[in-house]
Image 1: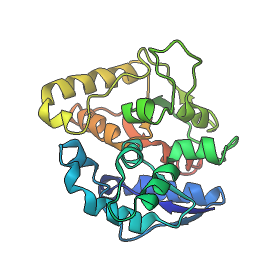
Image 2: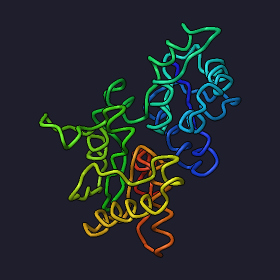
Image 3: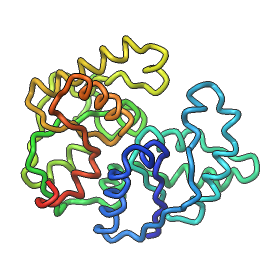
Length: 248
């Protein structure tokens, strides 16, 4: 299968190690991965600001970059959800619809398409899993705790395959971290308080690292951790799944 690797702009600029880990992991699993070098922002910040009508150039470029692949994979639940819900084209809606149907966040690609049952990974640390809202309620990477339904978690399923990793139990397994894109700007005080509460749930259960499929949430919590001189670190799930005992 031919995979187009979509690396969101903020991941490219601020967390390149997560992008590299995603590429290496997919290659280890036998995928033929290409990185279209002309890719830019998917347009999510503009759409979330109420300017989706101005994102057509982003959409057209995305279609130009990622048409022709069997799958498009990205290490960001929020950006993937944006493309799934909002990628359209006045010139070629058929191509846009095709991409909307074959773009996957990394975790769901590993579990739903590749159907991974074993990983050669080692990360001997206590890890807290943050279920991002976009991944949880948009992409259904895990069951929402408010529903009376069978429980599942695709990120947890993969993390349980990592040698030496100990997942911490949380009091509130899918509480929002308070980032919310523009929410953290418009409602800064509320956003910070939510972030502090989310971090406290992880730290009081002994987490050394907090991981998630969404680096935007991790970026928000990392800022709070650093301001409080915390020793707890954030790490994207791709970096854990790609990690050997030497790297850890």
